[in-house]
Image (cartoon, rainbow, N blue to C red; front, top):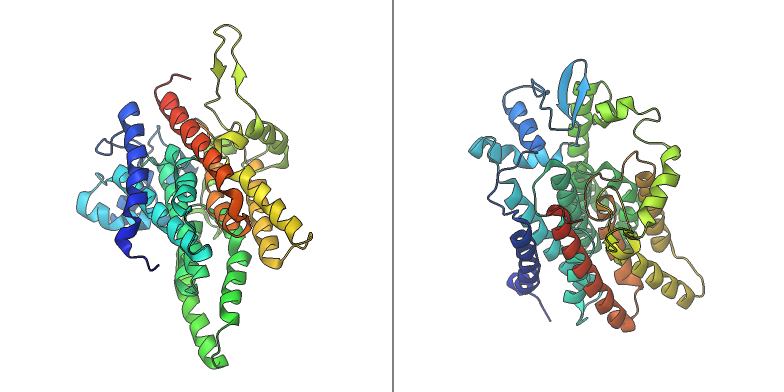
Length: 399
């Protein structure tokens, strides 16, 4: 059945209802001010003809380099905010942007599902599971600088995956490079995207010259974005590969720096630690700093592992190249996260894991058998209830 654009509205409406419940119980409505608007500060600085911010903002995470203060987060969200800063100055509608990104993520998750598994009646279940049951909601209520980077990367990653599978290589690569400009670790999935393009191109017949021209056009968008990132980094920090995070005071003071294998053991333990029973109050105690219980807060991860093992056994332990590159990308991404000095600070759940979920979702769509729906419903309910309750409890300081 052919879908029209408005046919996705019911899924988006369900997501917005869940988000509205979270807002009602936390008081985080989208018309409120945003104290952590580093991207708007950076965009305004560009409009005023400077690369640094001109002063310190003590409540923000800023890189300090040669006695100047810079936004250290990768710059793509500031590009998006440039026209809004021209219109509204520093009063950019950051929280509304996050809700828009939540809707875009829902739309492209459903479009991706329909492309990979057409005529599947459970598409809304799995889309709601991804969007509301795995931690994305925890970063979608506020347009804080940390959350905007992740929300934008999540939406762009889903768009890149959808357009790659639809054979629109130029759009896909541009979305992927834009996502890299929000969360650089997404760069590890480039080989997987190249393979998806190759699979789609294999069935097409065209002359070599025509193909070459098309591939060159595909590269224009991502190369322009890459040149912008590298030029900006070179102008600010003297290195095309330095966004500035290594100059955050937190990492300058750290003996092992921003990334180190020394952090792996501690982070691994935190990622899987279960809630504990408080001896005095006899209440279950959840953690609100760094990670916890990835198997419960991000239930799509263990479900994807189970689906992959099912598919792998069905294929008589044969691992095709597509699966190998996706698993390699997810593993590399996870390893980088686990070697980072922190795992996201104050939060409910595991917000760094959210960056990986679009690619896990893409793999799950190809691996899971048709009779996975019952297990999916259980995991979906558990994920939504735990994440919504945990979000509300965390922001109200009940836990």
